[in-house]
Amino acid sequence: MAAITSTVFLALPPPPAFAQVSRAVAVAPAPCISGERERSTESAVDDGEIRWTSTTRYHRARKHVLKVWQFTGSTVKLRPDSTTTVNDLEFRDYDGGRGDRAAVAQYVRDSGTAATDFIQFNRDKMEGRGQEYQNAAAAHELGHALGLCHKSGRVLSLMWTDIASPPITTPQAVDKANYRRMWK
Ligand SMILES: [Zn+2]
Image (cartoon, rainbow, N blue to C red; front, side, top):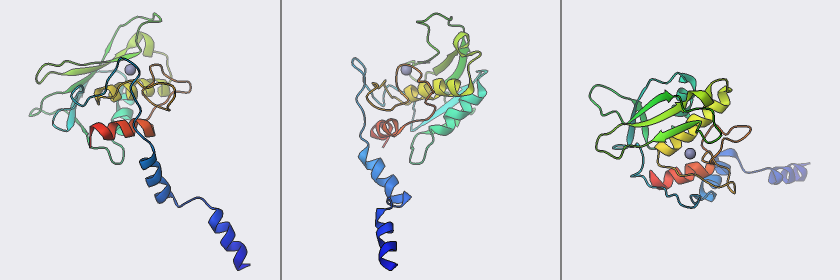
């Protein structure tokens, strides 16, 4: 009886803590799709944080992404703007049309000193979509605001050029690996 118990134990996967650590070590950052690059200097991050404001009507998507990008081990702080800080990023909406080439959402970076970047949602493409879809769009754009580039379909990533079906709404292991390489 004791021998059988022992065999069963050895066949079990490692305990969760160990499994988590080995997975984190095993996943390497993924390359950008051709023509893109990934640099911490091309982001909305200022002094280790993004101070944000919001006028978007997609509050739930905005709340969702501020949460999922503050995962265990993340280093960039995402905080509401205050009267004594510089506004790094504004969430807002625009009318971008319904055409096939119109974006669902965009990250617009202003390289000027103390300038405000934007994550802007195309109302024409966001309206009528499910919460998951809207969350996916917002999470992807905040990935860009954190400096991340697009990834190919060879890796499971939030940073594919198109919104997957079903939508990917949180940073994946690869996305966190790329994030960690920039934001140690
Ligand atoms: Zn994108």
